[in-house]
Image 1 (cartoon, rainbow, N blue to C red):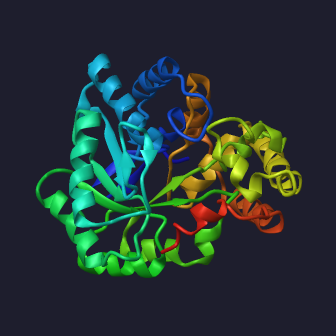
Image 2: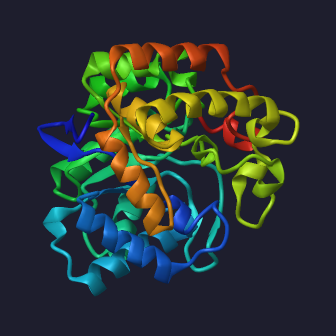
Length: 331
């Protein structure tokens, strides 16, 4: 049972909220529905929100900015994170080149994020690592933003353990965002989780529901073939791999029934029990409420041992990204 997690010198509510799917990679957008979901998140106390410049090529930040303006919510109630690293034409709503971590990009994009959000982000990440830019330049630029008061905290997303260690030798890194769930244990094997724990960097877990599969509601690969749905490009979700991979979901669902919760709630609670802050996303109020209720699922040591055994025995097969995206991670 986890209600908050430590972060730097403060605590954050757990789970947080990943806003990406409201504008990016999860089918058609519905801003009016999304605004209602954001309002409900505030009511519940789910006030750690995650966005990025690449989500909807600015549209996701604009959506959150619109909510802040129209709702009149007390900004101090919210903790907002965003990310830079992808060059974007915000008028054409498209990516214009490979990942960049240049000082110029970071300085330009923090201003754009602030303008679209209508407020300074609390936490600002490098979304992906550009191996061609020295960390001294990129981490130095992030640290300068923090010193100048343009954000309060800085972080990295999907980097290697070596990169995290070096970055921490240059400046205080507050957060590491990675994919982490019973559906994806890659970072337990590559050492980056161990490095984060050793260095005192808070782990933020995106896709704690395996991009929806761990809810038990997606059992056919054809469901991922719609417009603006990147799951259709990922081998793990394809027609060849998905049927076998669903064994994990079925076995976790059996445990969830004994706990009186949904399989999705069980998985979010498991991520939190691993010491990470999960940030599940949704467009819908009912799904938000379901995810938020995961904080009341109590997992005993016996539960955790059983879940670990299932994950080990029924680990999903297939890459967690398509080839182009795989080339951008783990640097």
